[in-house]
Amino acid sequence: MKCLVTGGAGYVGSHVVIGLLDAGHEVAVIDNLSTGYRAAVPSGVRFFPLDLLDAEAINKILASEKWDVVLHFAALSLVNESMRKPFYYLRQNYITALNLIEACAQNGVRRFVFSSTAALFGGKERFSLIPDNARVEASSPYGESKFLIERALVWADQIYGMRSASLRYFNAAGADPLGRLGEEHTPETHLIPLAIDTVLGLRGKLKIFGNDYPTRDGTCIRDYIHVTDLADAYIRVIELLDRRSVTYNLGNGLGFTNMEVVQAIEHVSGRKLPWEWAPRRTGDPSMLVADSALIRRETGWSPHYSSIDIIVETALQWRKRNPHGYRKQAGIGQEKWSPIFGQEVEL
Ligand code: UDP
View 1 (cartoon, helix red, strand yellow):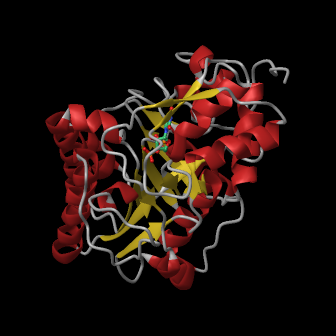
View 2 (cartoon, protein in one colour):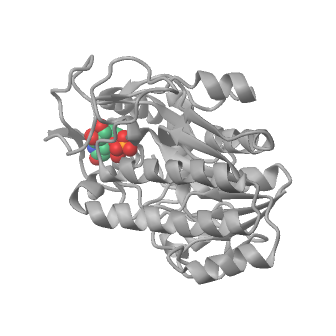
C-alpha cells in the first residue's frame, strides 16, 4: 500500500514508518521537524518538510497522488505543557488535523489511522483497567484536542465514507529491537528515557513526581507499551478499515509504578539509579492502564516486546549507542542516515 505518514520523523511515527517498510509498503512522510528528527526518517522514504497548518500545500499532496492510507501522528503531545498553553494545544492539534482530514476526505482517501491517546480518559481516578467503551473525560487540553479529532473522523466517515481507526494508546516506550531507531525528544520529559540517561550518567538525579498517589507504593501507575508492538497494531488495523471505522485502546494491560520502572532499569543495567522525590506534576492521573480486549479480539494483535525488561533493554541499548540521540544528525542530508551511529557509552 501507498502510505502517507504525518509526524513520521517523531518517536512513534518513525517506528511505524520502519514497520510499514518492513511489511513491504511504500511510505512518504510529512513533518515540520518541530519535534521530530530528519535523521529518524530512513533513506528511500520521500520526505515533505511541511506544516499541517499549510492547508493548501497539504491539499496539493493529497490531490496529486492516490494514497491508500494516511497515518496521522503529527501533534503536540505533552499533557503538562497543554495545561500551561491550553488554547495553543487545542488550536494547533485540532486545526492541523482538520486540514488533513478535510484534504483526505475531499481527495478520496479511504483509510485513515489516527494516533489518539489514553489521556482522554484522565478525568477521574480509576483503579481498574480502562475498557474500550470507558467514558471520555479528558483532564487536559491535550486529551481534549485528541477527542475533538476523533469526533471529526466520525463525520468524515458518515459524510465521505472515509474509514478510520482511532488508536488510543497508552505510554509508548522502548526502541526498535534492531537498533535502527530510538526515543528522543527535546526537551525530554518522559520517565523511561530520562531514567535511562540518569543511569548512564548522561544527566543528574531523576526526579520522581509525587509519592502520595493512592497506588501500591504512592507513585503513578502507567501502562508501557513497546513502540514496535504499537507499530504492529497500526499495520493490522489498516487491513480492517476496508469494512468499518474502529476505536481501540492500545496498551499491554500491565501497570508499573514509577518506582517499579526505576527498579527495572537498575535490574537491567546492573547499576544504581540516583533519584529524589519531587512534587506532583499537574495533570498526572494516578493510574492509566488499558484493557485492550477489543483490538486483540478483532485483529489478533498481542504485544510481543512489552515486558518492562524488554522495553528497558531496547531503550538502554539504543541510548548507549546514541548518547546524543539524533541531535548530532539534525540538518544532515538523508544520505548520511545510518541505522546505528555514535559511540557506545561504557556502563
Ligand atoms: N515522571 C517522573 N519523573 C520524570 C518524568 C516523569 O516521575 O522526570 C512520572 C510522571 O509524573 C508520570 C510517569 O512518570 O507519573 C509517566 O510520565 P511520562 O511523562 O513518561 O508519560 P505520561 O504518562 O505523562 O504520558
